[in-house]
Length: 225
Image (cartoon, rainbow, N blue to C red):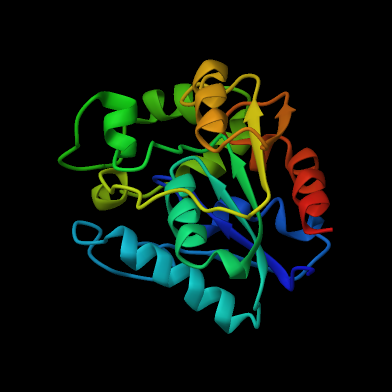
């Protein structure tokens, strides 16, 4: 069965607007989701849960008229798309992970990245944020991108996955210059998803949707076809 459209899920500290450079390059109808606590879904980020995020993805897919869809997640968005596909695998035509975190079932992204759960995810100083997210962006690109960053929901970072989806095709995209998700960690994330994962690499940093939107759109369009 073909997909009715594409659903994009942003990562930590971001909003749906991070996908703006990619949206006009996608061939299928697309919905970029604001997870609860940012953008079009105002909420207290201190109380947002993974359940809330899964509900937001399905709410936006329903509103767009997508029965089946390609589900794309960047960075921490990997947690939300994994849980969504685990719960409703029949609705997900293809999963595309973009420099995404995929902790083992029963573990969390916090434990994966820091060894322990976190107390909060506030805005980080600009110099640290640029080192992580903007190492391949121009000053103009970085200025616009940093202006759109927001505090995040620690409940997503600390959430435990119920499991991995089965019967859903998976593509994992890693970036050669990624700092938060270094190539070795990307290998581990892809391995967590099983032996049949399709692998793609883009010569870019973590914020690939800004620095290399066409290369990323080509991969997403391929999954949608």
